[in-house]
Length: 163
Image (cartoon, rainbow, N blue to C red; front, side, top):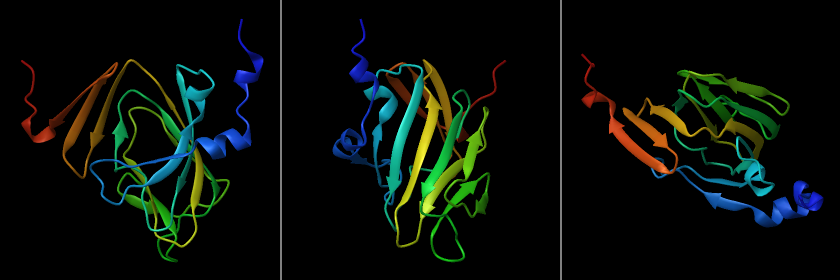
């Protein structure tokens, strides 16, 4: 029987459980957050609360082949011309504000968030947790293949056609 209290993640628990992490391929990547979905036992759905501090970025510009993802901005804003944060989507920069929703159905276009302003950019992010995922990193020319807990990275320039 499921402990019903374990199905509720309280605001204080979220605040107390925040961890800071970054992407190893982006020296300016810094996100504080919590994997809320995992914390309450979700296995197929990833739901995350995230904060990008002023002057930092999300992970690295990437696209997904298998797992859909979405982002919902809670506070802060993304605006390159005014010196805040912005979303880079498929090679273009977009101004986003609290209440804006971005969706990346698969195969997705590449996307990334940067916060070049002076306030935190706070958002919810949701993605699938499939057994297999392929992600491309267009600015780096790399492809990631994940099968379960195994992750392999390839240089896309080394890819050979089959047959």
